[in-house]
Length: 465
Image (cartoon, rainbow, N blue to C red):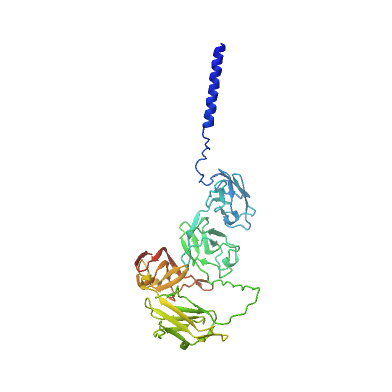
C-alpha cells in the first residue's frame, strides 16, 4: 500500500510540474472586443406612447436600448407648432425626458424633432432627426410640405437657413410675429414639414437667428409669391434666397503708438502677373489716392527702344483711382510705360515721388486653351448669361445667344460655371424685393462640374441643363 501511494504521489507531482511549465510558456492574449458599435440608439418605449391622441402631456419620457446623451439640444430641438417657452430636456442613463412648461393648444398635432441631439454615450452614434408626435385632439395631422432652398446669386445651398410658415397671411407677420412652424434645411438644400394641418400658409426663408423675423433688409431672405395651400396634394416649392441690400462692414482704423512722417506722394500698382500681361484683358494701374487729373502727354507707351506705340487708349474710372490701358495685345511682345513725375496729381496736389517705368511682356498663346461649350435644353428666351467663377468671384461673363459658346483663346485654370437668367438684360444679377412691389430675384443655375481649361489644348464640354 505504501508503494502504491508513493507512485500516485510522484505521478501527481509530475502532473503539477507539467501544468506549471505550460502555464509559464503560454502567450497571454487580450480578449477580442468585437466589432465597433456603429448603430444609433433605438427607442424601446415612450410615455406617453408615440403618436398618441387626446393627450396634453407635461412630461414625455423616452427610453432607449443603450446609454444616451444630449448634444446641443437647444440648437437642435424643433417643436411644431412653436411654444412660447422652450421645454426642458434632460437625460440620465438610457432615458431622455422632456418637460413642457406651456399650455398646449386644443385639437393640435405637435411634432418634436430632436435633430442630431440624441446620440449614444460610447461611440457618439446619432439618431438623425428623431421625432416624437402627439395630438391634443382626436387625430394626428398628416399633411406634408416640402421643397428646396437655393441661394439665388450663386445657385449654392446654405443649410443654416430656416423655412418658416405663418398662418397669418399678412405681410407684417414675417416682420413682427414669431413663426408658427419652422424647419431646417439639409445639406442638399431640401426641407420638409410633416404632420401639418390642412390650411393656407405664407412661406418664407430666414437665418436661424434669435428673432426669426425679417427685420433687416440685409438678412438672407426668400418668400413664396403665392400662399401655400396645404392639403393631400401640396405642391413642392423652390425658394431663391437673396439679400436686398448688402451689409457694409465698417473698417476699424488701427491706432498707432508712434507718429511717423507721412509720405504724401502718389503710389501705384499694376495687375501684371510676374511681369507678363494677359492677352485677353486690359492693363490696370491702380493708385493709392483719388486723382484730380492725369496728363496723357506725360505718359509714354512704347517698345523697349522707347519708340512710341499708337493704337492704345487711356481711361480713368469713375472713382478716379484706376487708369486702364487698352491695347490689342499680341503674344510675346515687350513694352514699357513711362510715367513722368507729374503725370498724375491727386486731389491734394501731390504727384509721384519720381518718374517711374513699368516694364512688361505679353504672355504666349500657348498659355491659353480654346474652349467649346454646348448647352442642351438651354432656354435662350430667358436671356442666359454664362459666368466663369474662380474663388467665388466672377472673372468672365458672356451673354449667350446660341446653344454653343466658343473662344479661340481662354485663360487656363479651373472654373466653376453658372448660368444667370438675366431678366432685365443688364448683364448682372439683381436681388429681389419684399417692399410694396414684390419682386423675386434673378436666378442663377450652378453647373456642378468644374471646368478645367488646359493651356495649348482644345477644351470641350457638353452641359445638360
